[in-house]
Length: 216
Image 1 (spheres, rainbow, N blue to C red):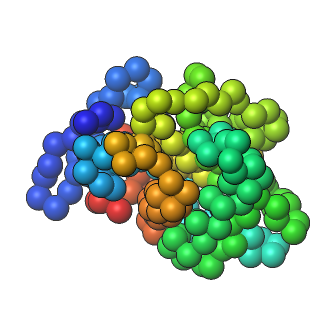
Image 2: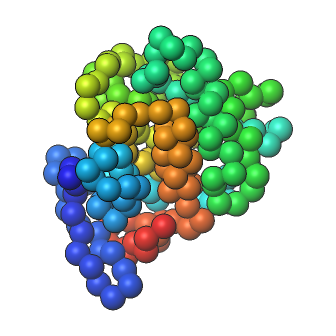
């Protein structure tokens, strides 16, 4: 099983730990291994999630203004050419509806009106090279689709919640397995990732370096 980072357990809490590369200096907390979607033998699981100090659950109501919608941008399509990219993207957006905490949000790739502050969710199915959550936010703001690649194994899936080019939260998962991938399985994965992406509280807002993190 691929594990992103590590943690040590304290009574009822997960303590922040150091991560490789730039993770140790970033103002976010990652959790790994505890967010198992299914058995590792199936190679579909959620490996890590992070919350930036700037994230506030109260933002969600405003992020869905003015029509109760939130824009979703999807890069990559593991079902190409059988399923057209726009259809796959809207299917993934629809799978997010009802999965978040807080206000009812209509996630869609084609919002009726743009949000004035450019709140949006960006999803990438595989990539070469795979982008960070921050890079996904920047790419979406520039309307520059990253290159996607085919994969014979588990497909990395990254989801980011952005305001303009700035990252607020992100989730990383792997999708695949011996039983094959299906649209229904991708919908289930995206729904679970949405729940984690938009948590009801921010455990790092008060102390981004030392705060405890409760499981979502």
